[in-house]
Image 1 (cartoon, rainbow, N blue to C red):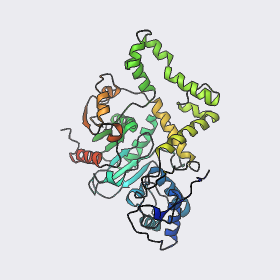
Image 2 (cartoon, helix red, strand yellow):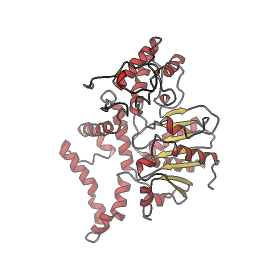
Image 3 (cartoon, rainbow, N blue to C red):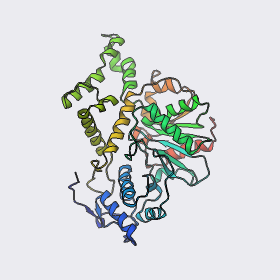
Image 4 (cartoon, rainbow, N blue to C red):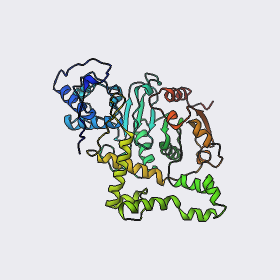
Length: 401
């Protein structure tokens, strides 16, 4: 269903660049694609994607439309460095094939330094802002993973372990000899952990494993932790033993009740098997689509923020839903021997004061750097703070000093 919101006029926006009209048919088509994606009329070839408030979902819509219109394979990460219609038109004109795996985006390819591989959080895609990239050296290559299925070309994976196998294989294909630098955001930290386990199994390891405000997502690992060590559980244990509390599965039964009221099926909708039921799958996708609509908005330059339309990109919602289910089912608190750097918020640091917290169990060999008060501060994508920290770690050549 198309948006009924009337397009905005370019003249009503405060854009940095003056209007410049398309000079050829390629630029005309690209302006049409951008105008449709942003719901803004009269855009020019020098209007900047980020100045318009673009985000990862808008970039996906634009690059998918470009691939369809011109038959040129293109990934959303290209827009990070080529953020105007004119610069994208030059890439389309070159018609260079994309040799990278479908799950990997080249955010910055130039430079001879060992690359950094970024892993997304719960959204399933990393879309670094230019302000974030400014914290790296100009010749620092950066690659970013996106969950399989976002482009509709692959079946989404539904376990953290399978995703980690997929990402590790792609990383080694692109950069087989190392050193390997891996950084991950929040929930994606568990994918990075499993990648480190896989590499350790194969007698190699990342030179740096950098986790940005990792937490324990709502799911089996967190529910087990809360049942055994949480404040509410500690009060309930005065009445019931821990074994009965775990068997009661309060979180799971609440999820089953919610699913039953919506679909008529008594099922924990958070597990991957729930998607085998067509009615539950449709309900789950509607829920996840609504969550994505609230997460991704056209940005600051639009007074009435317009949501990205997902009806034409249902595969994005399915991939995101399966990723969410993968995090829900993940539960591995085995100790990781790999030295790990944790960039955390003050709020996360307070959580780590609990000696039973899974992060304390998994990462006995770690360094903690505190940035910001909240999770949002720690994972901020429009700041060079984290990139400067990460670049400094990489410059130290893997030293733990």
